[in-house]
Image (cartoon, rainbow, N blue to C red; front, top):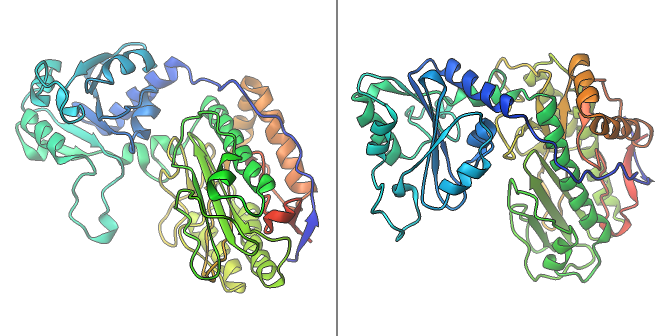
Length: 453
């Protein structure tokens, strides 16, 4: 496999303005399926500002400033319990055919009124939870059993304690997070055509924002000025906006927010923008050429090509992991984290792409092509992250029927990757972003991309 740096014009695939919506009946079905899978009398789904994705997936509400718990119970009971500021927000935003919103002021910010409904225990009793019932918890991630840690809950203990007291037996409260977040069988691991269309809206806009930074950045920009070139329009964020740089005196810290530091020729630079359903990241040099860097970037790009040309419906996640790792190793590189993971409202749901484990890739999985190369010399940065979805013929047909504009953009991106970048894509891989596989190693020469020779 050979890689070249070549002039490539990235087409305008069209930027969607109106976000496609997921129907109310779909949210109803998600709640019913979550309840059925849990096998409990009640299911409690926790959410806060950082860990909102499970509740958003189930009802399209996500708390702001405070916490919330969605209780799913007998006879389609759906109760959102939240604090002072989010009661009216939940009433306005929740997309379920029937639901209640209950105030629990313990979930409010410190110093706010606690005089009306301070006790979660009282709210739980009032909605019908009784001693002897079994409660399944959906926290923000499954217990870390692989590490040999105690099988606790990723769910605040103050709320777990209240749920245990309501059930009358600590052992009646059990973890059911994997019913949503298992890397292959979790309900959120597979999404439908409407959710794919909504995520494509986010991915299109996030990737376009990052590409505006890459193509418009100038030597002498501050990091803040460079980040402002993304032209943020207020889309809901899945992660804080990242932009960081460094010269050879230190590392490029990828998770850092932008500062007033000025970009100089030869600096390494990285940026990432993530919206609900799609994150994009790019990293390279503030330069128009560097032979040593190009050699490393080419080795990294071969790893990306291996990912795109290996991934398919039914393949084992271990095989993707090993093939990408082997290709990167030929260039002296490795992937810092798993080379690819499921994404949703948050950047990382879970991943079937692991060195061990019996997990298969399935139709309807939305993936972040997330290969962070390591090691990197001081002052260097490389990254090229994009979202894609795997879709069999039936799902592709449904997307085309329900969302023809979305499928038209996807088809155009597939043609671009094949014809301009030389990527041999299988029919099941649908690129969701505006710059799929576009790696410009030199940001002052962003019209030149790495391509398969």
